[in-house]
Structure formats: structure tokens, C-alpha cells
Amino acid sequence: MPALLELEDVARSYPMGRGEVHALRGISLRAGRGDYLALMGPSGSGKSTLLHLLGCLDRPTRGSYRIDGTDVATLDDEALSRLRNRKIGFVFQGFFLIPELNVAENVELPLVYQGTPRAEREARAERALASVGLSERREHRPRELSGGECQRAAIARALVGEPDLLLADEPTGNLDSRTGEEIMDVLDGLHAKGVTVVLVTHDAGKARRARRVIRIQDGVIAEEHAGAGRGASASPHAEPEAR
Image (cartoon, rainbow, N blue to C red; front, side, top):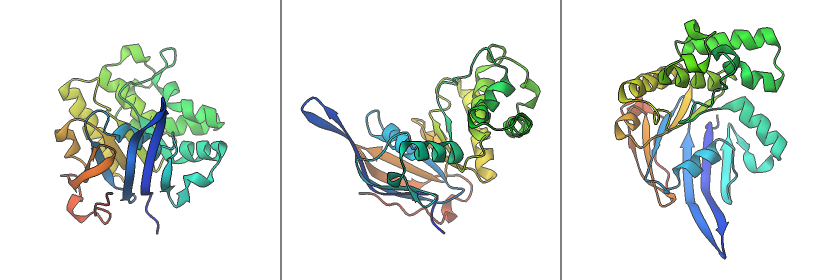
């Protein structure tokens, strides 16, 4: 069976003045279902660009990216949007919750945009909230939640579409250390249930929770090693592929 994520010699450059900025210079990477990757690297290394490509928010300048066997280069914008909504959930450093909506309504919102019937939306939102331990706060507004609870709500919103892939971009960056560890526990628990997780972090301690730690430097994979995550040493897709 194909890997969930396959990148082959992926590069991304952007015009700047009369020249170009090469954010990615040739990334080859493979990840299977249930994998847990941590992306690390200094500011400007290319890790955020890589995350945007993995999330189908951008397209490579060169090379190929396949998600669940589908080459994203073959998709028009509408088809790419459908794939993104169906297969990928996003968690960011900011929570981006709508203050006028309660927690359950915030979590349901992606399904509203998809036209999902109300009864199904509510049932799926309740399952997502239960998965992050937030069921009892479903009627509260974001202003009534702690920072950690807001991030749990944001994770539930990312999960409500039942995606194959969860992308987390510095999800603990706005939290104190204790709350940040609690959020990492949530991500670890989701991975233990089979969710594929890709985490961007500057924190080496948090990165070690993943199965695989990948360090990006100057737009290439400079290093990959096993983390301490569950099954790290036995990951069938743990072989590094860098160019």
C-alpha cells in the first residue's frame, strides 16, 4: 500500500526582486499511516514552507508530493481544497476560535462549511471534544476557557473532519510549560489511537516525543533520527531520505 505522505525532490522558491528565494531545495520524505514526525530547524530553515506543502496550502516549484497516493500536482484548486478538507486537520500556535460561538459550535464549524447535516455535525463534534477531554466545556465561550482549553478546542476542531493527517505548527507556543506538556499529552494520545501527526516545534524535548525527528537546515533535510515516541524503533518508514 502507498505511504500516506510521499515527497520526491520537492523544492519551493519565491520571486524576490530580480532573483528568487529558495525556501526548499530538494526534500524527499516518506511517512506511513500512524507515523509521528517532528520537524525542527532555525527560523528561515524551510520547515514552515514544508508544513504548508504537506497541508496542501501551497504547491512545490519542483518535484512531486503525493498524499495517500494522489499527486497534488494533478489537482485543480477546487479538487485540492476538497482533498485538504477531507484528509488534513490543522492546529496552529494561535487558537483562532470565534469568540461569539461556544466551544461545540467552534468545533462544528468546518462541517458547517462542508454542508454536513446538523445531527451528524453535533455527534462528530461531541466525539472530537471527548477525544481531547473537553466535553464538559462544550457550552462555554472561548473567553471562559484557559489557554490550554482553547488549544484543546482547536485540536478538536481539527479532528472533527476525521482527517488522516494532523499538522500542528508550534501548538504550545502561546502556552506556559505545564499547559504545553498537557497539550503534548493530547497529541501523543491521538497518535496512540492511530492519527498521523506532523509537529513543528523549536523545543527539542517536545520533538523527542515523536517517532521521528527531522531537522531542516537551509531548505534540505540535514538530519533525521528516531525519537522516543511509541514504536519509534520499529517504524516501517523511519529510513531517512534527504537530498
